[in-house]
Image (tube, rainbow, N blue to C red; front, side):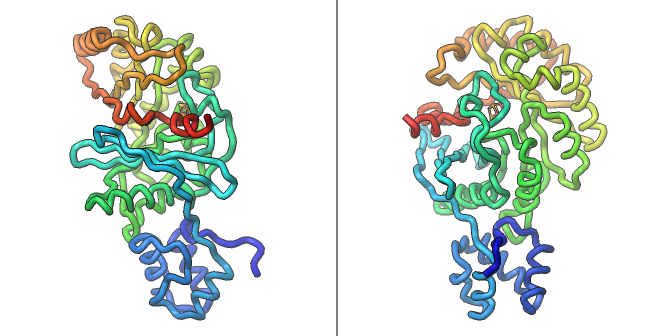
Length: 348
Ligand code: SF4
């Protein structure tokens, strides 16, 4: 027996080619294995019935296939969000969400169990850092969410790395998973159909920019002064708003398309007219998108969603400054579809 089993779901085609070669098998076996993994969703190499029994036995000795255990699936009453709670072999739990928006089906995936960044408004942040996910565990979230979509004659059209964890702090596994997501033999989600969302870990952003990976980048800005951002997001002590704006400019220069700034609107904290004006000022000369997110209320009473009138006023001030923006309406508020919330519900 080999001491360490390769996870087939985390292997890139070149690595599979090498393994197949080591097993004295023809190169076309790689395509067959990928087809079994991604198109047919097998959980065990013994189910790969069009490859020889001998190869199946050899593969079983050298490899494993990551399959997360689905603990619970919860659909919102409106059908706009479906939340998946998965358990890892360690017993730790993570979550993913399928977001339904017109013809778009977006899988929101986790990259870590918990998160070290401790954003004060975030349920996952309160868990602290527990573990990094493996690439196969990230890919399997997508495969299982997509399998659910396929059962409804749909398919996942977009991915956002915006679930539990800071993806750029689990860089090798996340980038490997991003490469696997775009395999044409697999889910085939290429280019900017995949977005990495970061709290602003600048070394990770620079590293991602240097990759041959045309993914979108979203930066959670969430405040317009360093004082407020530092209170809400401790990472701002190290990577400040001016640094984020600078790296957003670099990103555009490098990629030819801009980042998305995510901005969570929290009553009395980030929703003042002055915030709208500063947001316009900060982003004025940066090619970027602005996505406003009215806070998804939790049991944490320190943070509240602004009243409807306040939201309308904020939007009006921003428009008055000539800023275009989108508003992400909360899908699945009835199932706590914000990162980390289902996990906490299960723990009670
Ligand atoms: S908002 Fe994102 S980066 Fe911040 S603590 Fe939560 S999961 Fe981590």
